[in-house]
Structure formats: C-alpha cells, structure tokens
Length: 456
Image (tube, rainbow, N blue to C red):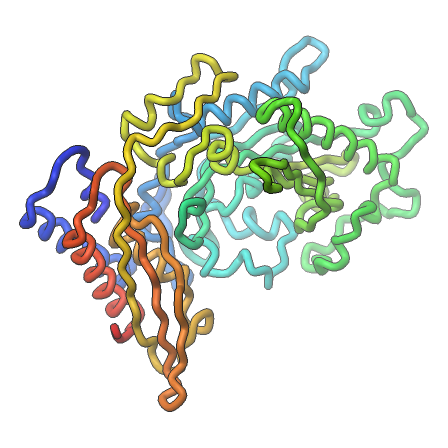
C-alpha cells in the first residue's frame, strides 16, 4: 500500500519510490477488481456477495483502539466523559451507576445497525454508498448506537458505549472514514422517576402497551412531534427531558468551561422522540456537540423492557478533541509521530494543551478528469464515495482533500464527465511533485480498471 511512503525524516530514492508506487498500484488493482469469496474479520468468517464494499485499507483500522491508547487525545476525551458520568450518577453505596463498554466488536448485523433502531428500509443511511458492508447481512457499525438493544436485552439500564465507527464519506480535514463515538443510555422506572410524586404514571391510560408491529415503522413526519410519544405521559417526558438536559449541559460545561454559551435545537432521529441537538457558541460559530432524545418505546419493548422510560445521547470524540485541543486535521488522530503524541498526557485530565504544529509541509494539487461509461452519471451508477474509497486504497493518508470541481454532460454523445481535485500532503514529511504525479497516475489507472472510465 502507498501508506508505506510514510517514512519519517528520510527521502526515498526514485527507484524505491517507483517500487512502492508500483506495488501500491498492483495492490489497488487487486483490491478494486476482485473480491475474495470469504473475509476473515475479527476472528469471524463472512461470505462476500454483491453488497460487499469494505476495503482492506479500512479493515487495517480494526483493533487499533485509539480511544484506549494511553495519552492519545481521543483517550483523554473518553476518560473525561466516563469520569463525568461516574460522578453524576452513583448508587446508594456511592458506586458509579454507569457501566462502560469500549471494546465491543465493530462487526454488526443489519438488524443491529438499522432494524433494531427503527431506521426505515429506504433511509439514506442504509445505502452502500454510505456504509461499509461485509455482505448483505453484516457491516462495520455506522454508529455505536447499534449495540443498544443487545445491551438492554442483557439487563443493563445505565451504560456508555465507546468505539470506532465506519462511514463512507468525503475527504477533507474534518472527515475520515473511521472515527469514534460515545453513546449512552439511561433507563428509569416509575418508582425512580416519580419518587416524590408516586401518583403519576409513565404511560397514558389509553395506551394498550402492545408491542408495535416491527414492519410498521412510522414515517419521519410522525416522529417529528416534539411533545411526546403517544405512549408516554407528558409528566414522564418532561421529567426525563429535564434530567437529560441538566446532565448533558453539565458534561458540556465540564469539557468547555462553566461560561460556555449553549442552545438546544429540535431535530429528528429515528430512534428517539422528542429529539434535540446541543450546540455551543465557539469562535463566533454555533457548533453541534451531541444529539440526544427520549428513546422510542418500541426499541425498549423489543429488548424486553416494558415498564421504563429512557434517554439516549451520542457524540463524536474527534469533533470534541479537534475543538478542545485545536487539532486542525482529523488525520492526525491516526498518526504515530512522537512529535504529535508527546504533546498530550493523561497525568492531568483537566489540562488540555493546545496542539502545536510540528511543521507545515506544502500541498501538492492535481486534477483528475474522466468520462463515465455511457448511461452512467454521478449518483446514478457512479458514486463519488466509491472514488474516494479507491483513492484511499491507492494513496492512503497522503491525500488531504478531494473535491468534485466540475460535472459536464456532452450535448451530442450524452456522456458525463467529472473532474476531481485531489490535494496531497503528507503529515510527516514533504512530498515531491514527481512523487505525487506517480501516485496520481496510479489513481487514474485504478479508476480505469474499477469504473471503466476514460481519462481525459
């Protein structure tokens, strides 16, 4: 893989660079033109099919557990969140109520990732262009929320899940196909919620309590009602909302300081109702830091819980770390450069130093234009995310950004042309233009092999 070009403090000779580039091109061709009949992932064997689109490059991230790597900025943010919840919720003996699961396998089923969370079958998040599918029934989790039902079914009512998630996405300084989330659930029974008002109820008297038909998922418009779900009483929802928002504002102030300006924004998630996003005012902009809401009762029912109400929230560790540490490029979280990692320490979790750039390496920018096959257009037979994955397979993390700068349809032939601008920049050394040109050529060759395009 061209990721091996990451040689610190040395200049590769031209013959060595050619060898690496040639090997990478051959590897990319093998990855993009053939798919093995079986994949060995995390000790499991999975048959491949027409849905398989996970790449060997993406699979190399499994097991790296950056959120558990000592002194890593993601591990520091994880500890801050865990410690906050340990302090916010304690039982009568003074022990933390929340349990933490941070090494669950990222290989999940479609049932776990979508169906259990009431995500409609036609929802855009299910598309092959958005997810890394192992086969039709398995994928790399797109969110840590995928573990909710299995943990609740196991008898848990207060827990945090932390781990990496995988999404096919654009390429720039804030997007990476692998990132980390923290997801939490808290369930409360009537006697706990209404300890001071035992005459109140969790559920409406008119609600039958029957399990909703899992095949009948309400459309988004029906779940946008920010008042409450039909089953819950208004008193139950308002008390849970108050507790949830109080705790999450406390977490936000713990991370960003007591004077941080914040606001709540109504939103929609398939698995919560009502739902909100919490935004903070940072550097003259409103930034989203987490999403949350009252859990859909159908989710609890299918997990075997019938007499509780719950809230859930989720947040991205990279988003928080980039703000708190002033880290400008998401690729840095995957760097093993000691100059980066030595700037952070878990010795004092309250001391969050600002990242200082080791050095600034210059960008190299090349455009790549090609004609798509006949009757193929962007998002109609050709997905830019497919191209981004191919580029990652060929060039690794030396690509800083890709943008689709032009689309053109020939008036006579009807063929579509696209132009992508690829910005190259190594995180640890200077790339020569000759080196970039060589990588760029292999991306072009791999595009021809994979998509049957014609380079312009």
